[in-house]
Image 1 (tube, rainbow, N blue to C red):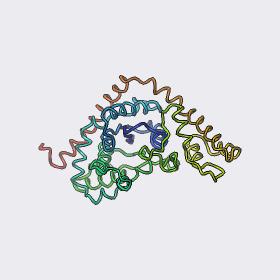
Image 2 (tube, one colour; image 1 turned 30 degrees about the vertical axis):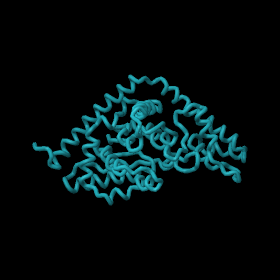
Image 3 (cartoon, rainbow, N blue to C red; image 1 turned 90 degrees about the vertical axis):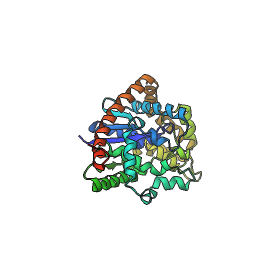
Image 4 (cartoon, one colour; image 1 turned 90 degrees about the horizontal axis):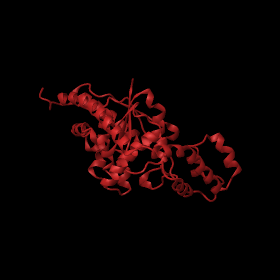
Length: 312
């Protein structure tokens, strides 16, 4: 059975872009693989500097994973920081990759262009992500379109290590569901917490209503394109055709219809999420992180021997 790995940062409340870009595809495919689902808390440190907020977010992401239908008996759900082999391997990879290689990263250049603090962790993000993936001999990485380059970085780093020290790492493949590879935000750009254009995945109905009513529309257009683009994630386009034709120019009506369709999908998941206890979250992370550490340490024993730091 092939191995699959993905994960989300606990840097804030998840939004519907996270659901359609990562979680929903994962739910649909994960039972076909030996699956690993990571809470990427070390990655979150590049932007989140609030300890209590991070602790809460880590538990919340696990609740989100369970609420969307992921069975922890069928996937290893683990906390990145509880598997120290990730950062150990990152240092070894750092001795192989060049500055110019990392300077080409789209995500880094985008954040730099937007004036965000470009700390070393942000610069080195692709190397830590490569370690996340390669430690588990991952075959498939389901990611959004914006993360495709990071998987290519993992492939190149694997190849570079293999060329230097002998066959060690698999070269993984990105799996992108093209129809939802980039989920639009309320302003028409890619939905992102950093853009402030999200619809919360497990927000209250009032919070979802506020976000949807704030979707940017073109007052000159007969059909609100941004509303339709988000609506098409929740209903088939043939179902939406008559609704948008009948209510041409009635933006409020169309937004209210979108709110109800979001609620029909999110409501039951939100209810499941509310019943997940802290004890259940802690148990899942403890057991999953132990499994992940065991696999990661087996790989690192081989790596340490090959690079020469293991004396026997």
